[in-house]
Image 1: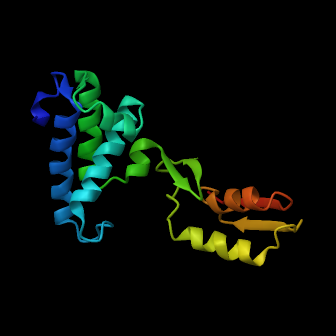
Image 2: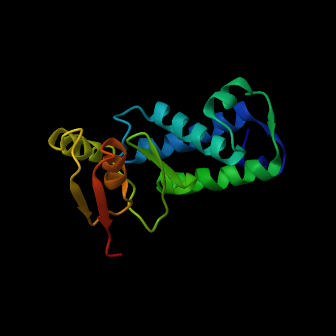
Length: 166
């Protein structure tokens, strides 16, 4: 299926295949792709995440309903997101959320997206803070608040303060 036919209902499988092709081209051209050379897997995951977001369903639902038609309006929304992703906009901004330390966080372009390696910082803090500690913990320049939230969840007796200048 072609992006040009977004005015017609299209099956999920066709939309995803076309989007994978479009996003695969972006990964092939990108110098800083985070998929370690696996552009097919990355573009497939991204297409799945974007369509699941537009339809308000899980990726598992997409797999189970690949022949279902996506109404033209939702197909158009999907293609808008695909093009924004192809232009380099982060998935987290497109779908408005990012998971960090198993916590679903809302993100917007006003906040930096928590990076997976920042979870190493959380782990280091948790290794340092005893499990039963009732300490005061400060997260200065907290950004999204991801580190503070993770520590607060893992060390509930601690009093966690998070500050951000922006």
